[in-house]
Amino acid sequence: MHSIETSWCGPRPRWAPILLALVLAPAVHAARQDPTAPSAPVAPPAKPKKVWTNDDMQSATTSLGARQPVAASPAKSTDANAQLAGQLRSKLLKLQGQLQDSEKQLNELKSFEAGEGNGNAARQLHKGYNSEPIPEQMQKLAEKRQQLQGQIDALYDEARKKGILPGQLR
Image 1: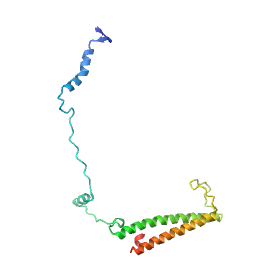
Image 2 (image 1 turned 120 degrees about the horizontal axis):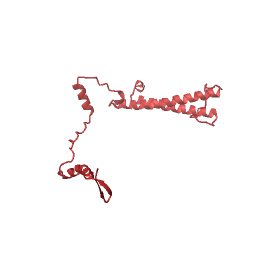
Image 3 (image 1 turned 30 degrees about the vertical axis):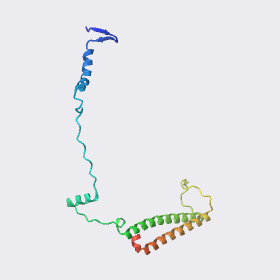
Image 4 (image 1 turned 90 degrees about the vertical axis):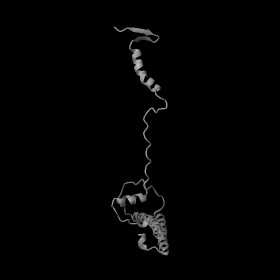
């Protein structure tokens, strides 16, 4: 049989001091090591990442023998007229989109006033409800269309005065 000693905590088996020694041995061993020596091997510092520039990319492609012709896009050209043409083109596209939307709304109102349906009997909650009479809505849309067309014409005139060809704006 096992002999059991009693302590201030209650009965204790004889192998308890051995178990305690095994558990505490690594901690005592670590405490006895040289405090100036690092406890774990230190990894060498990581190399900083290389930042690639356009010059690096061009030299890398030419060194690999993959020479491709560099085509300059008109929007990225350093020529001032080409940059201005790109800006005017983007403005024109925006205005033309707004003009098409207003013309579509005007055509829908005209067909609604004539008593024609659009073939869609479902409610379109995203459009909302407008309590303005149809003729007033049509008049506002016609004014908006004329205003947008005037802005488009002014952009074409500005481009013509700056020496930009109409084909560059398309």
